[in-house]
Amino acid sequence: IDTHTHAPMSLFRAIADDMRLQDWLKNFIFPAESKNVSAEFVRWGTRLACLEMVLAGITTYTDMYYFEDIEAETAKEAGVRGVLGQTIIGFPAPDHKTWNESIAATDRYIQRFRNDDLIVPAVAPHAIYTTPDQALIASHNLAVKYGTPLLIHLSETRTEREDALAKRKMTPTQTLEKLGVLDGRVVAAHCVWEDDNDLQILKRHGTGVAHCPSSNTKLASGIAPVTEMLKIGLNVGLGNDGFAGSNDTADLILEMNLAAKLQKVNVMDPRVLPAEQVLEMATSGGARVLGLDKEIGSVEEGKRADLITISLAHPNAVPVYNLYSQIVYASKAADIEDVFINGRQIVSARHVL
Image (cartoon, rainbow, N blue to C red; front, side, top):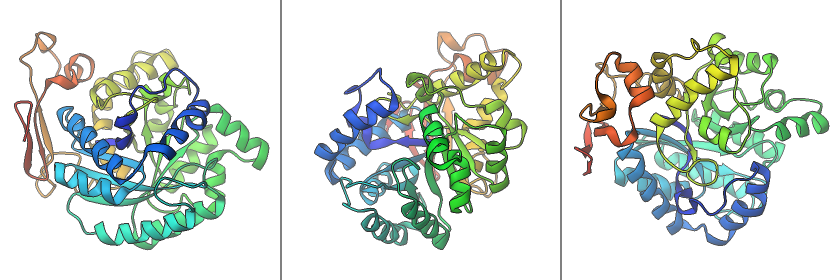
């Protein structure tokens, strides 16, 4: 279960790398999106991403992008479960010129897909530094109106935190709490620059955290305090983040591997975030983050039939002493053999059906 990505950005893979987030966004990605992103761009980018995701064993992905109704149609065609958030942002976007238009379109999008068996529509205000406070509040009100998730980037970089402290005298997390945005079903991506008080705020509101280790390392954003999050009982899942710039693949097995190792070196203790716990983050933990743990995240009677098989017929899987360690530290996305989503077989012996 991928708790944070930007699937259509697969078509931007490798156009801009090795730079800081703000530079990457303002000077490369936002301009590229304004020139190139259309409904057809989103359709084909989603097709490519879904193909890669199912071959990597991802049964559910959580997205934040534009033309989200088109993405929802495309994900359904691919048979992939998606929690798909329409982006709300404070400047003219490829699909809507104002955030007010985006809110109105998101309302229609939610109504269209709110009872779908594969698509969970969501509202996705981009971040506190790109989305005006009024738009953040409107996004929250819309999410609460329909009981849908609200997806947002939060405390991803030191700059975001320092700017909020300088301009608002509050951290980004305190800002969202004051605006009332954290009331409801919220998934906060990254949460790298959070202090103990911020984590308690997230805990108090039941906010789910999408941890994106590859993205955070590639952009040199920092290491999220996942050990502390789990210690206080926060729900934490794993995310690949975007297919361009911040990450470049749909390999959630790689994210498990890196997540475990980053926490060990961050707190200088090899015992933290063991293989069994990080595998749980990638499965049932991700379901709890999304508020879907009654439906997905484990193979149990009464839940949706989402499951994968991982082949052990590879040199990197011999011998097997501990299955958790094998999957997290030795397996590869290419070892995924079969994928079932909603009871339907999507991948058979690495052949996409």
